[in-house]
Length: 183
Image (cartoon, rainbow, N blue to C red; front, side, top):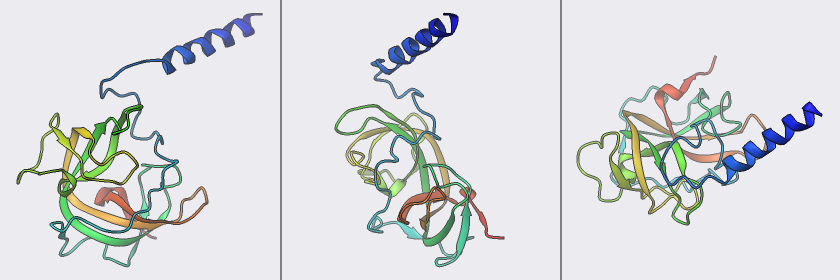
């Protein structure tokens, strides 16, 4: 009886939390959550025309590196092939998709050149911007809040998820500190 009551309380708690109507950019999800997994993270490989190619990146185009981040399931530990390396400012952002729905929090990464009518200087945490990035469905045109800023080399990569499935091509973006050398 106690076990059944406990299970009922737990089920009610989950049910109530799912009905939350919080419109803030709060931390409903962490950066480790995989809300966007069902969407394709492969892209055409097109980059903004004003994006500057890195002159001497740690990971050269065509080389391989181990992915040390888990933006999506199956990413951490996968071997990446470097498709592009660029010097820019990367932003961790939170936003509500253009078609509504649950907010996306702590999305890594969009870059400075993917912000509509971007200023010449980097944005600071708390700034609101309109994204031109279209890495995920319903992202382009959404208003985003900048959570953090990192001036870095960003990489476009191809990789085969550790969980199986098709190769992800032209994934945008991972930062230099999210990669390590293949041993």
